[in-house]
Length: 386
Image (cartoon, rainbow, N blue to C red):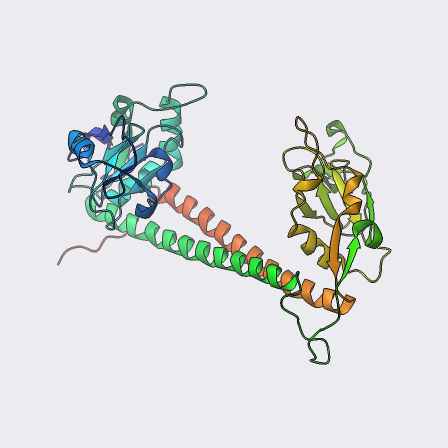
């Protein structure tokens, strides 16, 4: 149903230039040439500094598909349905055969229609029109026919402004999250190698030597009993497989939190921290320090999480880690220093988790807003001209 005062139009009717794709063969990269945009370059935004470049001659030959700031670039294949607005920092560029230019006319808001193209309803329509089994793509002819809802221009602009506010909040939170992850990585590199020493409870910097220990010296290392998929239940305790939690089971085989190293499949070598009262399957090797009071389990988790365990993996068809993980050597300081390091890294983890939760919430809020605003279910007030 079309909201009162709105209209439904095919994309072909809202553009100032015909929707078209770009260069068939861009040729070799030309450092001082004209940038061109591939489907893989379109991910909600376009980074002008990562684009490959073609010659002036090829660009001129395909000048019908040149793009400028404000144009929408739409991915026709590969990451089909992804779109982005050409930024002001990209004054002139071209496209490839896998991308299309949608130059919205002055009677419409390019940002509003960028959000329309990113809406769940339109993306579902795009996917339904796509052809191909292993390599899906949508033709220009079909894309031009896709209908979008069009609000009056002032309302389009107001809706776009509201959604762009959410985009800025999402972008800022993503940057904060990336910064926190980088800071944690730097902390791990400094603290887990002894390059940076912390202060003890008396305010004196730790100075004792770290000892090299094999895992079998500081933990019980074993592969638990596995359970089949058919044994999983609707309620109960979390079950850890090769890819994290895979379901629930009526019993648990570990009462305390544990370090579980995936020992089979494509995630072989990934280090997980499990919940208390959980069932860890035979797809993981457990590194259990419960009977080793001189070892901080959380510290050892961070040490292993920051280690490269790939050298322990054997088998080509089905990668696996066996009991040889017991011989893996780690460097261990005194217990108090272990605990101090673990506390700092746990605090960093909590900050990362909080930012990830905030980011997820913002994305969910934006999705709900898009469903309401872009369909006219929720109308916005537009200031009338004086």
